[in-house]
Length: 71
Image 1: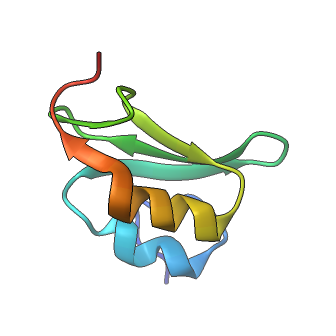
Image 2: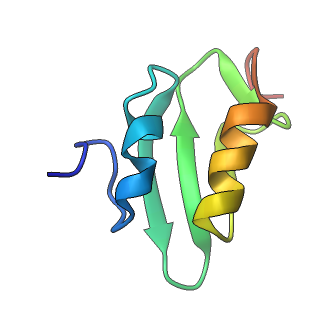
């Protein structure tokens, strides 16, 4: 069973969905994969991580999510 915060078909995102910095993960067929972050974290100043592939979204989440509110 998929993690409740993981609204995608990708089970490899369940570990990220379990991270306390994550509100929800979803995908849009023509607009990539999105990870909404809790307040107090940002991805390049934004409140969501967005990438086109599972590999890229995992890498970006692991290396580029930082403490601090979006700006």
